[in-house]
Image 1 (cartoon, rainbow, N blue to C red):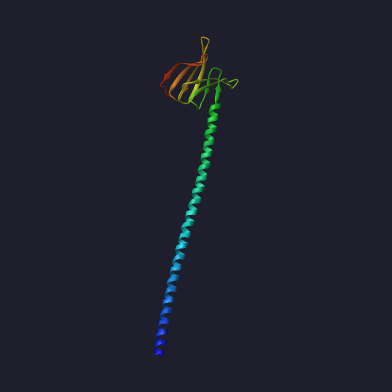
Image 2 (image 1 turned 45 degrees about the vertical axis):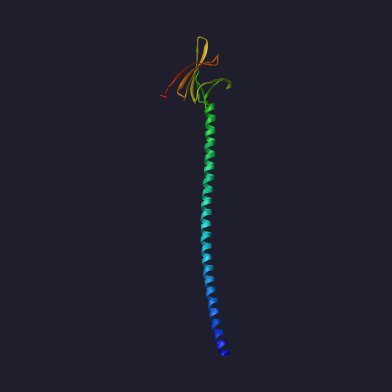
Length: 164
């Protein structure tokens, strides 16, 4: 009986060894599969990081463009505020507010502010009549207004004019 037992033990040992080998191979295959999955995920992460870098670069570029355009707009507003043309009898100013600022050309000091237009003032003209001073202003709000300089009051408003 002993040899039979010995033979049985050897047979079971071989089966156990085969099972262990199969488990090891299965484990090895699973490990290799996990390695490939990890490598794939690493590649996905790398691609996402690259996309993020591209987006960050685009955002930085857009911020720089925005800041540059904002600076240009502010510079243009300042140029418009300072754009005063004097030709003996008339003044033209471009004003970025809805009020007309009458500036004395010689002193560049704000003398009076006439309020009434609801959009940009594109031109003004200065005139005297019967010892009174008048300013005529044309605006993007499609009105032309006449102002009494001495009384600081609007005398007349003409509505519906066009830029033609």
